[in-house]
Image 1: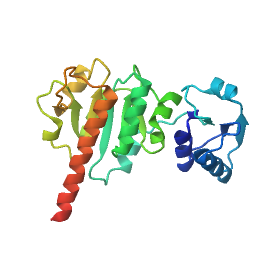
Image 2: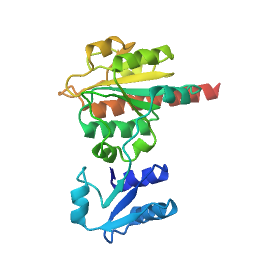
Image 3: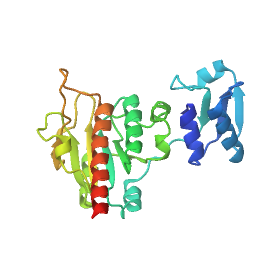
Image 4: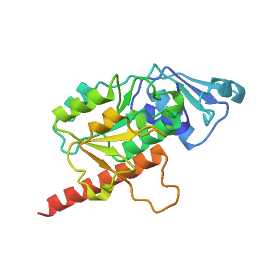
Length: 248
């Protein structure tokens, strides 16, 4: 199920299959009214219930008075996403090597969508999967950026390389600062797990490792924050590259 106003509205706007929408009794604001209007247009049944019932149904504990019942999330296939983007110049895959916290995964998906990632790759085992909590934190991003669940991250990286991708790994100990590395063109960006970072085999597959310059005392960032910063720098470089090409 999907929970939260923006999450449900984005799903409706993306024409995702929704079985039923559950609303809090007498919940009346601009977003909820828009949700009801879209549901009516798409002939999706809407049921109103009391707060106790909604609280019992919710899995994210922050439903904001709206829950949508949907079929299980359908992960995308790597081959399908690659085929769909084969004519694009600046394709970007975000590769998550064992992110376990669903809140981190949701926040990373939100950043991935904002900064134009083509797809997000996650492993099938020992990692967070797409859940109602992830969807709530992602705040609608799941409707716009495909998530690809794969059995082996290392083999997936090898496949991307065969398709002409360079692979960059976020690594705090790297002497190469992210702003000093060319990150334009087809790219896979690897973010390691909370605490452990990238696995050895995954790190060995990276063409280069980049770090985020930091001046504080702790010397570390939350995985989702680090992903957002790295994605911003990639986006910045690509915008500048396109602007300079256009000026020629």
